[in-house]
Amino acid sequence: MPRRVCELVFSYYPGDARVRRAAESLSQGGYHVEVLCLRDKGESKSERVRGVQVRRLDLRHRRLGPARLIGEYLAFMVWGLLQISVRHLGHPYDLIHVHNMPEMLVFCAVLPKLTGTRVILDLHDPMPEIFLAEFQVSENHPMIKLLRLIERISTAFADVVITTNIAFRDLFISRGVKKEKIHMVMNSPQETIFEQTRVVENQVGASSSPKWRMIYHGTILRRQGLDTAIMAVDRLRRKIPGLELRVYGAGEFLPEVKKMVLAAGLQGIVTFHGVVTLEEIAEALTKTDLVLVPNKLNAFTNINLPTRIFEALSMHKPVIAPRTRGIRDYFDEESIFFFEAGNPADLAKVMFEVYSNTEGRERKVNKGMRIYEKFKWSGEASRLLALVNGIQAR
Image (cartoon, rainbow, N blue to C red; front, side):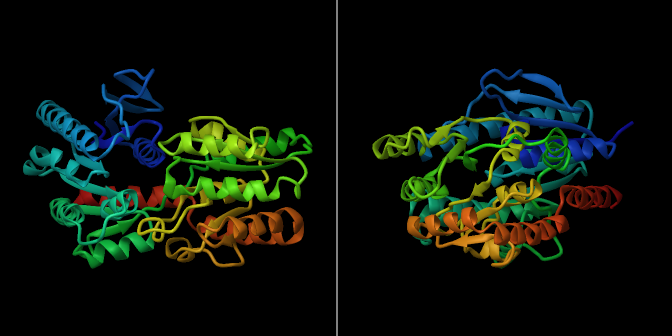
């Protein structure tokens, strides 16, 4: 009988790409995988998705401030605790894989842990830095101190900690996680979605287009810098024929961005396409000329490595990103295009460089792809499976 794994995440499935990659990889590796998650509009309470059993709480995440967020976290934690405990008593889990945010979800695994089940805490992002960026408070704010305390006790409770890049790993180690306890599994796009789409499109043949298409895809929050991209596009509207920026995603900053587009008269240049699947993102990337990662600089974005960079390179597309520690740990000036975070004039300058310098563009994409090749999901999935198998063997 296959060993049983429970994935617990305060997010949507299969919409959360990291959880989807992990769950599908473990399922393909011979594990019976169950995902406990939120339920989005139109989703079933229970279904099987590509070999993974999904069970959902009828709760939708709404960004309506700290009080609402804490309420959502607590409701989900109670549900997760009950679900895991009852299911474990009926048919024991062999592994509980908990994804933050929040870290305290790891305590939903208290009963399985007491009976010998191993627990992994997967730190997608450092929660104190997210709050520093989101609410613009000081590092000495009581909430930040509380979040760091929760992080410490949560990582201590887990048997193994996973995170996504060098900067995050170093940060967690500096806050008390033992080096031998923390492991990295990168956020790399699934080749079966992205590279396969690129191959199919190449076989079909891309249609010639008079448009110069750029794409922004991801959550639309102020810190993601989409407003910087809009201002840069406004500067280039008369310099690049057929200029177009396609925006995929949603978030609390979207209404403000739409107002900017309307005020600047960019309705025919900047278009909004809502939240779509990973498969649809991959298809959209085949029809784009440039991928934008226009993040502003703050405590979180400085150490983050956006998955969108790897997604772009996996599709052989150039990408512009800010010069931050998290990105420069992996990429240099020869592998992607950098701009000064928050500076629309500099972003516009780099956009025009990408547009006008075909040879330089191709050279950087090729070098960037060589870096991406080192961190392809097939390799990261093998690392995850080896880690999980090793935990089970203890």
